[in-house]
Length: 545
Figure 1 (cartoon, rainbow, N blue to C red):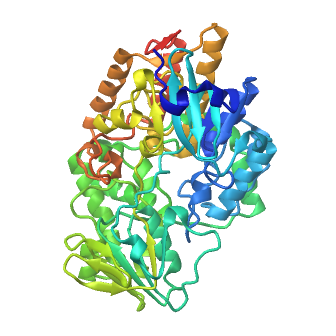
Figure 2: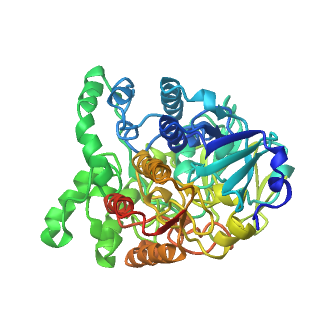
Figure 3: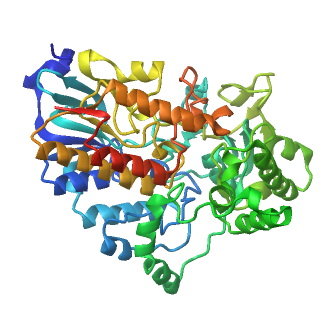
């Protein structure tokens, strides 16, 4: 019996028939579209945004920029595509990133196969025909063999504060910040959230706002960013490293150019301090991703590194106990949450026009017409509210769509009970649904995203090519294959300190979301090898018919 029900079952409503639908036109979606087209497939891509860019189209908030070095946040499949673009600085900002994605799109002539301003609302698998019917909010009903999700791991914003519609001033979410910006001069501005996004906003707008009030709940370890402008000579130097980067990035622990080089046990206390200081002063994520890997597994090592970073933060906060208590983490270790890079963020709180409100034990109760009200009744009157309240990471982009697989099963219901995938590439019960940036792969959180998204889309492209060359039409993880991957993922994750924390890395920011470490923590290189082995061994974790 066909699993599709309701409108999806009405084949007469079909507006287009293709071989593959790609969801999303960001870093993964653009490359996936290019690869499948090169394979000769008829491909249609949909994106709710007004143009290409994915997260870099939506996140136009002040201060948005890379915290991966620009020269590694690039496609590596085409040397001329890489070398014909030049970054103006080490960590470029959103406008330049968006320009780069336009450059890629136009260079590869991708725009003609993408429908912008079009949100996919449903995707139902028709078991009788072995095909998906994909519906959009513009009335499209697309009949496709493959449904490939490149919707992103941070593309489903959380909007769970009561009273947002009652505010009589201007209220925006960072995930949909207006492209024209906001006039903050002389106005009372409130920012809710001090995660990576909130940090970038706060440090950028403090000098512009008449008065800035920051509402902080969960403090973050932060590392200072050094962001030099690039000369033509600088650009030439990194371009000459193309071959080295292409050979190296896919095999490091996190897909960055650097990797862990030191063993804690082999170093004296003085040597450890020197390494920590050198990696801290690098002005990148190197302290987190290339000092001592033991910080992820050994509580004693983590305690020492955490205190090193805390001391750096306390020094910059000049001993102000309120700032230290609110902004310096005390109940979790460095590296077990996302580590943001910043530029003058901590110093922002010394400005006369900036107030910091600790809402950990006195949370926000609601937004009222006048401003933000806390649980104890305190009202902070504001003219502008900027909400940097996070995302339903990994799963949200697909669970907000009515995705139904065999026997009408619902992906939202399945992931609502337990977050399970096979290598983050597919889900048992959903034939020909292939995925990037979903849970149980490094791309769910702990990776230089272009490194991991390129690898996943290339694996998907090869899997489809192999399937078609063998005269088969469907690929789906077996129950046994999925169990084996989930067991392996849990074995790796449970050995880390990340497993014991509370953060969006485990879905803890979404009420009722099943607890599981979203990202595979065995390393980008190891994950890549396991994916390569899976294909080379004839896809033993999958049923292919």
